[in-house]
Image 1 (cartoon, rainbow over the protein chains, first blue to last red):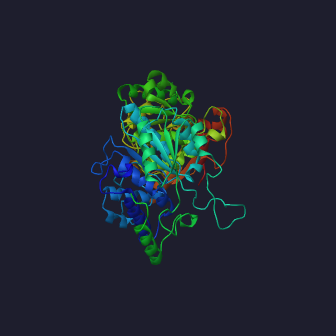
Image 2 (image 1 turned 135 degrees about the horizontal axis):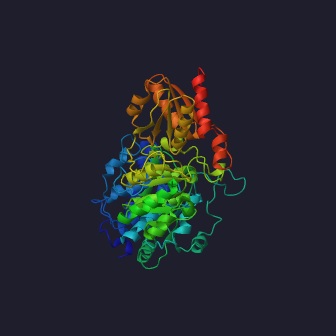
Image 3 (image 1 turned 90 degrees about the vertical axis):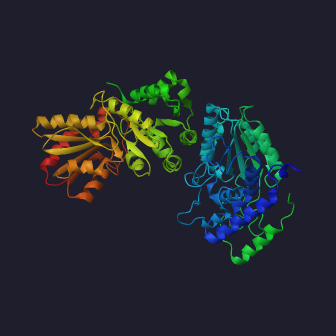
Amino acid sequence: MSVAESLVEGAPLAELSRRARWHVINTVASSKAGHIGGPLSAMDLLVALYFRRLRIDPAAPDDPDRDRFILSKGHSAIGLYSVLALRGYFPETELATFDHGDSRLQGHPDMLITPGVDSSTGSLGQGLSSGAGMALAAKRLGKDFHTWVMVGDGEIEEGMVWETVISAPRFGLDNLTLIVDLNGLQQYGWPAAPGDRFDRSEPMGHVDLQKVFTGFGWNVLTIDGHDFDAILTAYADADARRGATGVPTVIIAKTTKGEGVSFTRGTYKWHNGVATPEQLEIARRDLATAEGER
Amino acid sequence: MKAQRVVWGETLAQLAATDDRIVVLDGDLATSTRSDIVAEARPEAFIEVGIAEQNLVGMAFGMSTLGYRPWLSTFGVFLTNRALDQLRMLVSQTKAPVRIAAAYSGLLNGSSGKTHQDIEDLAIMRAMPNMIVIAPADEFELAAAVRWASGHDGPVYMRVARDAVAPVFDEGREFRLGAPTVVREGADITLISTGVQTSRVLDAAQLLAADGIDARVIHLATLKPLDEDALWDLIGGEPHVVTVEEHTRIGGLGGLVAELVSERGAVRLTRIGLDDRWSESAPNDFLLDRYGLSAEKVAQRVDACLRAPIG
């Protein structure tokens, strides 16, 4: 039995990811608004975290000793909502209310109204700082939980991220882990080559993130963000360092934007978008027949 | 006579001695804001975050989710401008019990000049949902407001002046959220002020009295929430009201009173404050005189108002 099958019996991660990805594209299509590429690139990381690593109880979403997770790239909210629904925080049917008036599932996560959401986000670059505050408070209060934060690679263009990257090691926050969803594309960004009007390049393609984070004093793990064994190993490594090292961990997870659906995969053009009925049929087939299920 | 910033540090040090939820997060300005008083008296209640105001707000928010009641320590101008998005997203939106101490508020900041003058803060913070906006008159009211804010379960924005002013109140001053306070009775004209400017407006009223003009002075320590009925009861029948603030005339105290009187009835209103322009670095007396906020300049303006048919 692989690591991926060990904790939640009867729920293979690949199957959960496919189901959550379907919720993303289907929900955005029915609500006629929302993001696709980012939620899909992050999905394997989110599913692995929520189903194998976080010490949480959907029946007690405010448990003071629960692990925290902050989706700093808040525009991927529908990705988080899909996982929260599968994990049991609210019914999967509630996803149909996404972006509707009076819905608990707002366009960006709202900690005051959505069960399981530990921090409101939406303006990029803020989540790591919020997570550092939670991790520092946990240290001071002698609490043993772990705070996890996910950012996108486009998001780390925001200066505030680096204010926290510099200071987190000073506070000894080994109970803080940053996951970089390095999907290699942002909403529009830069041309792949000068003058190229049809292809876009990686926002952090010119930066050696491993060296950067190492230079700032972080523990750096670099993985394939769609390989569940690699993800779970990295999560276990990060968690094991809690309380032992005084150094925060960053997991640089190489992912593919729009992963899992043939026509959204690897293109900036599905950063957001509403699938047609025909496209939804393609997505349904793509997500029903994925290979490599664990 | 103590400066508000000193009393802020002293009061927080006292409060932190009995309430370990109270922490001060500093943006490397402790010797200016006087959070160094907390750092020396209660080191465990003091957290240096460094020169990173956005991270300052983010970390304070994060700590507040675990029950802390953090105060922010840096120049107000960096909070209401540089870290405005963080205040809006992480404090206002989430109703976090983060206390925003806006040090060196207003025009007078030790000759640091226009880059450090926070003269738009009341307009900005007043527009933010869930935000309580307080500008105490003197050291005693500030101490009372700090004690009140420390017990409040939500966001608070508070002006903290750098330099001491002649006290308006005495040591027994209590803070009552939203309540207007008549600090001087007078029959000829009503002046409304906020923050430490109220002290200078009281001096202006003395000058006016020597000229035979009997001015009433109302102090608003809270701009939001405001007991509008109570304020209207005080000014509703008045022929002429003058607001005076160490703030741009746009959207602050003058804006607030203009909104009230335009909805409730006809009251002639004159707004004294900073013109819509950049100021400069100079000693306090020079700035107050140049920009019309000294006791003498306020008295002259009020005197002129009473003589002029409109304006």
